[in-house]
Length: 108
Image (cartoon, rainbow, N blue to C red):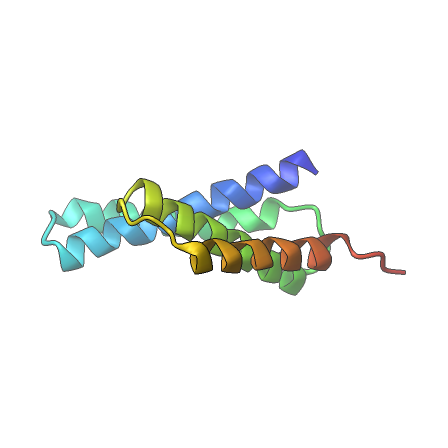
């Protein structure tokens, strides 16, 4: 379980970090190498979820989507210095509940 959570976190950091580097390159006129490093990080993001032990591609990506939302709120707060409001936290909490249902609901 700990490995699954860590992989979701690493995937989130790769997706958000890679996208952020490309954002800085294209939107904030940073050097080309920001975009190139961002692209490589996004390629790594595409590989990381394949390391999960869950058998269903769709289920992993659905659960990861919820984790990504929480991490994006945290990234905005910690990196962009945009304080989340009540609705950001409420939405993130709902996503955590959804992820829990998707991954750990009893199935036969």
